[in-house]
Image (cartoon, rainbow, N blue to C red; front, side):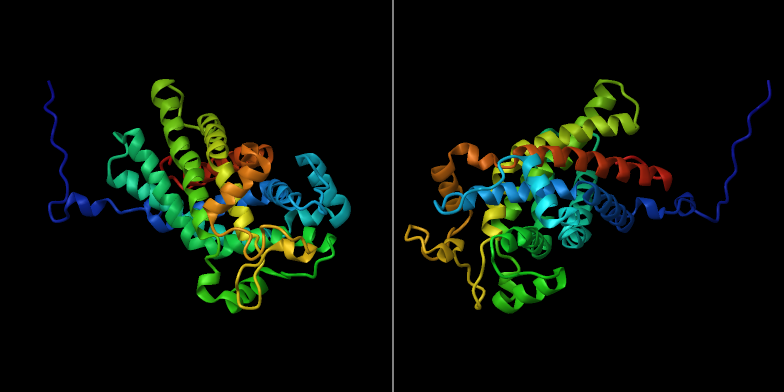
Length: 337
């Protein structure tokens, strides 16, 4: 029997020094890949986001008797935009969305990954995963709120012009400057409360549901790590995110779409119709007030205005984002998320 000789290593160099930390495993790389994946997802699904925002706002406009919502469904709204404003208008304001994801997507994914890794990913209970998803979404959205504010207002510009209103926003840069001049730093965080609330719920689906669904498919269903598992988990994430976040998304869109005067104060859109109603002064005093007014005027289903395009968008968005993100990590030799 031949005696096996022990493997001799260089005693002058500790083994820990032989293992270099790869760039793919670092937070900066995760940040970059998250932004790239989010940009790809937005370019594909942005028209659905714009349509969803128009549907949410048209219910608000319809509360005034003289103003009737012209489009009632997702397809009718989308075709109406193409017919009256041109097909490229379906991507109007996409630059502001990309700017937003340079902060939002990178921060939320890195924050969630750091929290779950720090507190034990393999044995992470559901409640902790949910908490980390909520915290990651809140933190990322708060930082990205100025870009999100510009996005919502740019999406409504085409509608304003068709209604005979003067142009309010011409470009993303001009919008940032104008909002800052009107309201200062505080003005850039207009609508941040409902925006953060929505982001927390979206990430409860997009991060937490994806993570839990993928782990269930791989560990319980014995599915292999790969595109199929990523696709199925992303569809679960998109549905959960849409159900949880649509009410907050409606509130966020309406609060952030409120116009401002020369001092940056929010003013009601109903003033221009000379309607003597309860909507004198600011339309919504806050997200809770917007919630109450929406339910009072449109019923509870008013909170799910735009749910179908929201769901249809979040599903493909999550699919595109996670498959792109996972494939980029695989190409660079990194482990799955």
